[in-house]
Image (cartoon, rainbow, N blue to C red):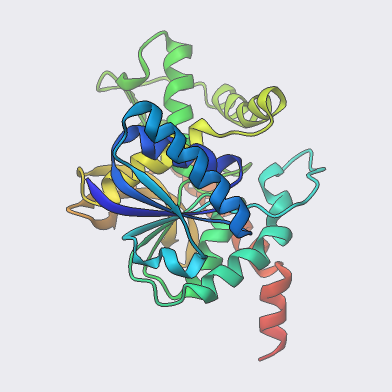
Length: 301
C-alpha cells in the first residue's frame, strides 16, 4: 500500500478518482485540493463518508495544492469553465481555458520530485505544459491508456472474444489523430485482422456517447489512473500507454515500468502507422505552440 496520494481537482473526474482509490485500497491517505477550500472539504467529507460505510482504511483530508507535495504521487484533474462547441477535436476545446490553470499549478509545484498523472484535457498538451512549468521529471498523461483499454474492449466485442485476449496499442494524440497499432495487434497470441476504420470510428464515438448519456466520462479515466499508479508506484511491473516526451514530441506511447523505473517500448509500426504517428506529433506540436501562454513566452524572449 502507498502511504499517500494527492488529488488536485474536485470535479467529476477528481470525485471518480477519489472514490476509486478509496475502494481499491491502494493508499491509506488522500490529500484533496481544489479551486476553493470549500470544494476540497466537500469532497473530503463525501469521501470519508464512503470510508465509514465501506470500512476502507483510506482517510481523506483537505489541503492547498502546495501541501499535497508530501505525497509520492499527485493526480491533476482540474477543469476550468468553458463551453465546448467543437464538432471535431472535442478534447482540444478546453485548451486555452485549462492551460492557464495548469501553468499556474506547474509553477506552484515546481521542483516536486514524485509522479504526476495528468487527466485534464487536452491531456497531451497539458502534460507537456505542466512538465515544462514545474520541472518535474515524472509527468504522464493518461489519455492513451484509456484509448487502448477501449480499443481492446471494442475489438474483443467485434471479434466475439474476451477483451483480455486482445493485445494492442493506441498511441499518439488522445484525440482525433490517435493511431491504432493494428499491425502488431494480436488475439489469443495470434495476429488479428483488425477492421481499422471501424475501430477508429467506434473509438471516436465512444466518449461522445458516454457524455451525452451521463454528462462526463468518469469511470474510465479513474480506472486508467488506478492502473497507472500501480505501475508507477511499484505495486507491479508492466506496460501501459501514457503521454510523455518521445523524440521531441509529447504524445501517447507504451511505457514499461520495472520497479517504478520507466522506459518507452515502442511497437514496430508499418508504413501507414508510422506516417499517422508522425502527423499526430506534428499536430500536437502546432497546437502547443498556438496556446496563448506559449506565444506570450516566445514574444517575451
